[in-house]
Image (cartoon, rainbow, N blue to C red; front, side, top):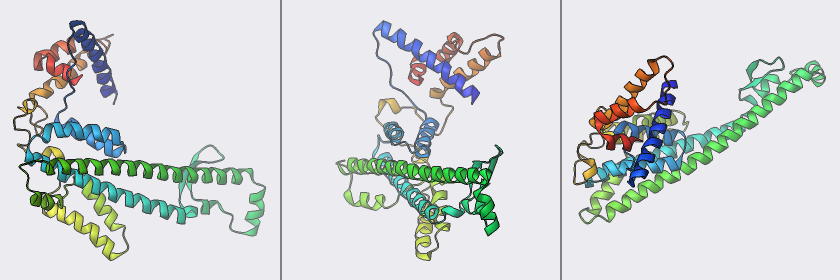
Length: 319
């Protein structure tokens, strides 16, 4: 993490330097470019953080790379449908957790700081006096009152966190469904696309391995056989029909088309020439860091090495 932060600071300074040079020359700044692994991480971060805005950014960039052909667009629709369906499963799971917490609040264990200053784990039920004598002593015990209050506050905070997480997940799911709907509308408006095949393909959402695992875990928790079978079938169908994988695996030739920016872009090869600038920056950063008294903000070597490897345009695009 320290190396990543240092690299980020170096890139920030390089960005400021490149911006100043281009503005001085009256040139426009290039658009950002991402490789396949960066786009995958951006999408995963958006889902993990429940960030609809980040998800929209990720989808816009993914579409620019993979949505330039009809087949690629079809795969993006399937992936968007799978993401929305997986988000719905997560929301159902979270809703059940909130309900169970409200019903079993007294027995839910939480971490709190005891009267002695050390962290402890206990439920509200654990701290309740059992006998009449215990109740009498508890009324006069500052320690017991303090710990019971701490547990109550921890339980309240946990419940508030669950509600906040539910709101964020609802927002993410709404954004995911909007993305899937937009993809569908774009395909329907394509003259060369047949409506019948769209309806058939749209019934086959594509999931990532992580989403399939979440669906399976949710299925295991269901006590009703019918509900459990419904979600088990979703996972089994996706696995049996090969509909598990992230967007970088959608279609090897999805980026081969008439789009000029996509020529030579291979998401399956993270060490392509478009990534050389990042590797060069990392290598040079390590060299600079190894020098006594060197400052990570020194960009001359990094910029020179990156431009030698991949050209100034690729370097500027990264920034």
